Length: 270
Image (cartoon, rainbow, N blue to C red):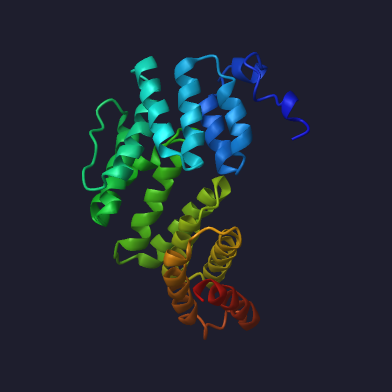
């Protein structure tokens, strides 16, 4: 807070935005939000001198803050300001897909990889895992720094966890590694849950216990902050306890550690 007035990410004339590969304020805002620093992200967004970029970056922050109507308004404004901006179109389609999960939006105007992410999200909503697997090559080509990288990685982990295959253990371990990369970007409860499921499939009890512990810890913080998460947190905690019960007799499992994780989950499930 004391240094925010000299933040090198904020000034429009910052050399960071004039480098050989200039930084995108929208991507920076997203990354800062993923790190839990929405105030700094808003400063980065507000300082942009490019109208469409400013609107997009601000919309990303508003979406993270839970203000979806304002995010949509800003994105529609950005679309008018720069009709060819693919990042803006992708962000708009994310909102449309969330509001109308049964009606996948058109991906005209997106490159093949970004389109694959939107198509994959629609398939995942309907548990069409084999079709999602068929998109894996396109999803694997999404590079870090693109707005749809996190979603692409998450989709690649999901089909490995939920699609029944003859090599399910290997696929589960692949999914754990993908989730590790996701957690390096942003530790989300749904990713921790996905990692726990991947670890169970991949026969990695340590990763299962750690994922369950981190998930329960995160839920505990949300509940202590007064957020109403009990409706979905309690049944999920029970599912995780069931998963941990399946490894209770595994000789690789440290009993005291297992009991500690179970105790955290019981608090969430109460």
